[in-house]
Image (cartoon, rainbow, N blue to C red; front, side):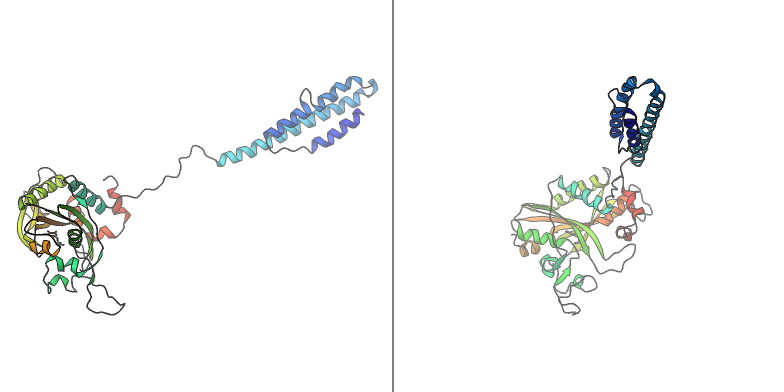
Amino acid sequence: MLKDNIQSLLAQVSELSAANAEEVEALRIKYLSKKGEITALFNEFRNVPNEQKREIGQLLNQLRQQTESRINELREKVESQKSKVESKLDLTRTPDPISLGTRHPLSLVREEIIDIFSRIGFTVAEGPEVEDDKHVYGMLNFAPEHPARDMQDTFFIEKEIGVQKPTDVLLRSHTSSVQTRVMTSQKPPIRVLCPGRVYRNEAISARAHCFFHQVEGLYIDKNVSFADLREALLYFSKEMFGPDTKIRLRPSYFPFTEPSAEMDISCNICGGVGCSFCKGTGWVEILGCGMVDPNVLEACGIDSKEYSGFAFGMGVERITNLKYRVKDLRLFSENDVRFLRQFEAC
Ligand code: DAH
């Protein structure tokens, strides 16, 4: 009986298998623990007649050794499988970083301009890039034959593809069109900034491009004077270029402002002494400005006897060049990461 039991267990043991450490341990308990099947056979050994003790004893020892070695073999197998899985899983590895881009220098500068003017009550207004003649020129007091309307300067949009007919649909050449849209839809007091992209039919070079960015400003209220314009622009220049910055207003002409001026700031490279950047003058031009022409106010439905206002417009690329010395305009739209990465810390 005992011999048969030993032999059937010996056959079983060589077939044992386990998928994990828990199953190996369950086998050890089943066969080799104090209450295990093999231990039970050893307990029965006492009752074996003396003449069989040698043979049965040998068989029992063989069974125990084979079981132990099979279980050890299984234990090693599951442990090596586990460590293979674990070796693929490197818990110390830093996760793949999410690669962040950098902010475009023109966005940085545009946001800074908006931030400075928002501190004196300006809010942002936006309008369409595809505009009509009325909002870009007509309501802004441009004469019907004004050269800015010329095909050389403005991109007109064909109404039918391939058919070149006179059209009043165009890509805006300045963001002053947003000023007209605000003046016709809001009542004074008005204090807005109009940032956006504008288009002009220019040959692309280091100094000119067929599109660029502007931020214009418009303030309309009772009793707005040229002194208010000057103060607002002086405040802006000091905030943007440093507290020692001086400004200079030179008479100029725009159809939509009267009087009009061009504004220079003291050269922020040489501090106004004169250098190659400011061509020895100590001044650099940064924007156009003036008092809103009464014709413009009236065209937009604002009573020019009750209200007056000032307006200004600057090129974001120009300000960025002054702040970060980006001389070649083309760099702004080439998407070269070696250029863009330089603004990582800004
Ligand atoms: N629109 C002008 C331009 O594109 C810039 C400008 C000048 C805007 C004077 C203004 C202004 O609002 O008052 O060159």
